[in-house]
Image (tube, rainbow, N blue to C red; front, side, top):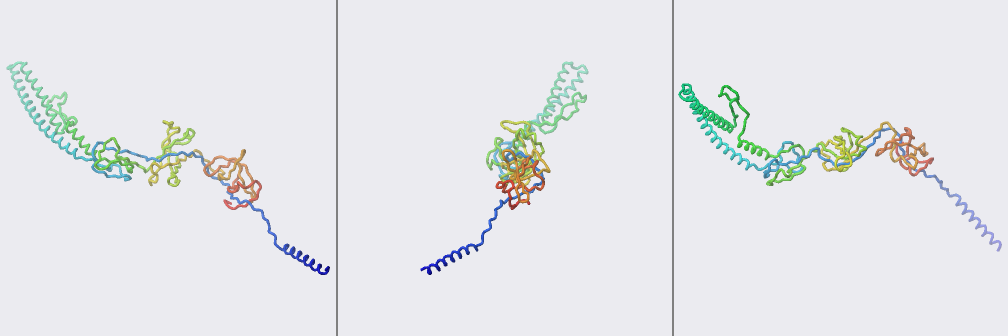
Length: 408
């Protein structure tokens, strides 16, 4: 029995040794520390500026409401909404039939009045000639003592009255002929000498001129070049001065009106360039010029009104679009700049993480100007320093890191 147990024990021992021997031959895994990945930015000098933003709505540089000078019925409409117009181009016309009839009536009245005036003039001329002849005859009789001075004075008074009536009839007749009125020169020794005076028109001719002007006004023309922004009439419709028929806009240049605060009004000047951003056009930027500044707050506004003019020859900017205006209030050149995300703060300081070789170093900095992208660094950094701009939230001072991107 003892001889049988010995081989069994030997087998167990050999199996155990073989098992441990196999386990010892398996390779062991090498454990390596994982480094935090970061991106860095090389500190360099550049320019930075302070700006102030305000909002406003785009308006046309010129906007004119067009109304007819006379009321009437629309005969034809020549321009539609959105059409381009040139200054002096006819927009619409009014019916003129009644006006032409009025001209014919006035012409007939004028001809009749002229006939009557001519007849009156000839009668007055004959009476004046007879009175003059009678006076000359009786003057000779008086000089020969055939009649008294009283009788001669009567003929003289009759001559003077006939002369006045003749002059009045003559002037009225010449007036109707649209000629110059004449009168005897004041103080002239020659009573037959006449001088021309200014042309005076008859009442009928004045009325005719007014009707002719109405005929011209029946063609309503564009007072400016631009586009039809509003149309409020159709053929056959009655129009008057009480309601605009068209609104025309000139958008070769547009304006943006906004307000600035009391702290800003003295930091901007007329003629200064501004940047105008329009979100409706994919945040496209345009150059504007400050055209006007109000020196006082007006009405219910809390700011100072400012008007900006923008060149718009391409007509991209449309009235009604909203715009953001950026006023540049200060600027510095040749200063150290770092991206905004590089600067971190705590209760006491602003700081950045600088990469020295592959080791993180915390660096306290003093910041200056700030724009939408960068901080100005007044002190704490030098040209060429590599500032961590990504991953800085996950590192500590003195830590070894792995640089994976950015400007190296």
